[in-house]
Image (cartoon, rainbow, N blue to C red):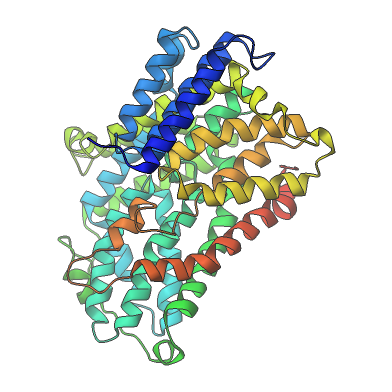
Length: 471
């Protein structure tokens, strides 16, 4: 298969760097393990950016290379799959499958959107529902798949108002991506960030700490984005007319009943989900880890006579490829931090401790916001950026937790192109409903990118310090 110019250039850059690193006289102070790590890191990044090779395959190859060369131990490589955060995500997917099978999600959607009477109400109620879904459905692609039938129902009810339907098509992926920062299970990238911080600084961010820092940002950014979608995608006349979405409209696109009394399965799912989320948020009070709480919830959700889904069917919904990718990129992040490669990469940065915290964070946020143009995988972006951000923050005297969180939150913006994120791809081509074009995405991104970057920087400098994270 012939290589494109972009792929050839990326491969040449990676091989050139690897050749320079292989020469012992170059790069004084860089140990053998750090050299190998940088070579693997460069090759993996270029493969993610410029080749069609599966991201998980590249990550597995990188993890294998680091282990066979002795940079990381076998226990470290395989231990990433046993990390509590990985188990948290597995069990969260099982819980999400049980909730989806019960029909509770469709009933909640019908209850919320059927009460909207104006366009603005509809957009903000939908936004609030999508933010809340981050507690029940892990990962953005899962939330997008669950939300698609709701969008189709809204598109059917508003079939005569094309611009409004297109705006809704853009609203769903926009809010899903921006609201992921609300919870630790909102994106696989969050688990990589937590792992790198733990291995590098010894600081562990739990579910409730992430919730305290991320939920306010998710709520504010999502509702501001909803207003921005309204202003950029609709006209005043579109927003002025009333809307009426009935429960029957939602029912037409749902296999489960969305009205009437709760079924026994729905009631059990609602009680279980509320209990699990409450226990996650109150970890400091009872001391039970979120992963163990999730495992208990998953067992109850799949138990005979109690659950709403069989364990075999629930496990079939878990994206094992994503989990393998996350585990291997976590191992890469650990290797970058422990081998000294990350420290060496940032050692030449000017300023050192003289760099003001606001300037350092502004650069981190700007780079993280634009990174999706090169690395489409959110987890890959975190595995590349977070180790470097943490190392450079320590060198500059900036709190690494604040820097890592700011980078991860800013990387949640990935709306520029249809291929920038799976939710954007999913809603860009919906059979039977009008949707947005690449030009619409570019127009929204021109305003949304600086808005979200400024908002993340504002929270990092003015809000998070009140919550215990001072840059």
